[in-house]
Amino acid sequence: MFRQLNSVANLNCTKLTELLRETNHTNLLLSVRDTAALSELIQILQPFSEATDINQGDQYTTIGCVVPTVVCLYNVLTELMRTVRFNTPVVKALLDSLMSRFSGIFHNVQINIGSMSGNPKPYSHIYYLIAPVLDPNYGFIWLEEDHPGDEEVKNSVIELIIGIVLLCWLLCFFYSTEVKHIY
Image 1 (cartoon, rainbow, N blue to C red):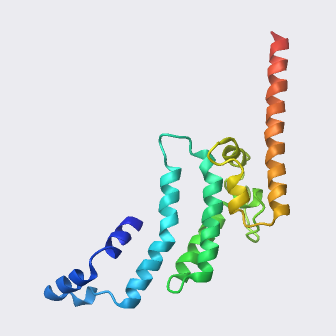
Image 2: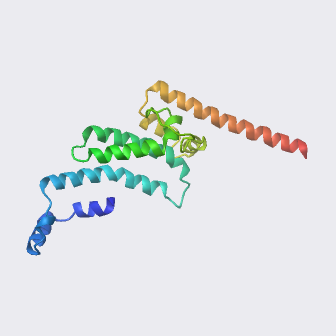
Image 3: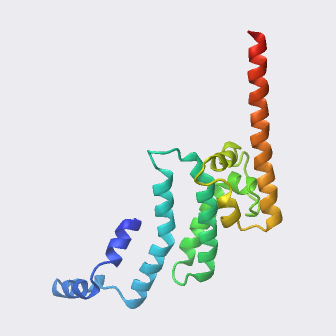
């Protein structure tokens, strides 16, 4: 949808208007308001197009992209809620859907999205927290730059992730040591 709308927005308006008038399709002419709303909608959908491209890569692992992408989309949408003029319901619906679908991620990274009912929370497994930290493309950069919380919250999330990674490492170490003793 983003690519189709972007293609329409990039058409030569003068030629399009002329063609529509010549073919008696004046009902399809875009007003100045329509054009502004279309441009705004493209601005809203562009981050989702980029997120889709990143998260459907087939030449690299994508699990490390999930949390940084969701946090970034949350930031973009909350900012757009303050700036959009024509598509506020679209932004609100996208933000509500994002918060509902990825409530486990928001809970784990301590982004308060209000009370979300339902257990278990989608995407709440710890590997979604560990994966971006172990990916050299992300590390903690997404947390430091994109997380909307204050430094105390960010540090708390960093400590949580480091604790989980250390616990996993210790479990692997002790398990491998026990296995060696058995044989």
